[in-house]
Amino acid sequence: MIDNISIRVSHKDDGLLLERLEDAYRRDINTYSGHIQNMVVYRNLDGLHIQGSLAKYYNGENVTPLTLPQVRDAIVMLEVHTGIELDTAIVKGVELGISVVTNEKPSEYLRLFGNRARFTRHEYSTLKGLETVAYSNSKGAFQFSGYDKLTEMIRKHKNKQIPAGFEGTNVLRLEYKIVRRRGIKAKFRRDLTAYDLFNPAVYQKLQSLFMEAYRSIPKFGRQFHLDTEANVTPKKWDEIRAEQYRHALPDEHRHLFQSLRESGAITDKSFERIRATER
View: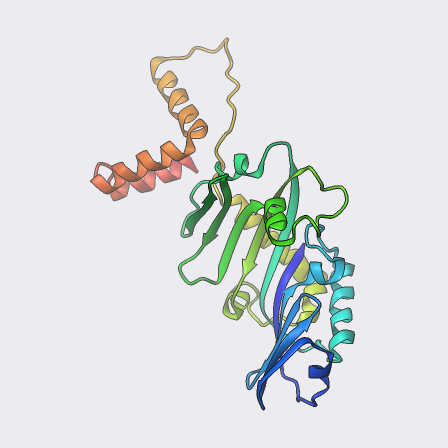
């Protein structure tokens, strides 16, 4: 489930790491950069920074999620390739991702993702249609996104990294990101090290944060199964129609709600009551 990581380690530069890097480039006496496979390595006065997809580094692709033992193996492998112990490396950012094989195209599900409280919803579309829905908070420490994974891989890698078993399928990718060190401290009340990423307690906490973020997003498109033997009053009929409209046409529902809010037809008090009822 752990994918992209960003870590910083205080490391005395002995010049040996630079020799291990691919595409090594030294900017000055204190600064250089390069790669170890897909992992970006950057050295400056602040320390040594390593960033990239741990799953891709270990598996060669990041569609298949890493198990907890594989996360440990990937960190150990990174230590071997860099020649640096990472037990004290500070995690500045971490991403958890899952790949879900779906019956329909991912866009059919993404368009049903509603607005999340205290987060801004972003849509990314092309001429082919909706590809990504992303959420970010005002401070930028936490993000959640869903997108068409295979479309993204085809665009970047021309099918070269699609693993066996996923060809010709629909894959919805869901990712939860903590992109700042202060965000990690806010959730864990302390810094995390690279070794914490394969600590079972930390891993379970990250999984719960992922599910908490996913569940906080309203989902539209629910189907209604009515009890045809029950008495449906005119008031109940209006409620059924309104709820069916909300789920069947989420974009129109969002636009109507926004226009009424902006015109002042929905007051602040009514806004809170409506949102509470919908939740």
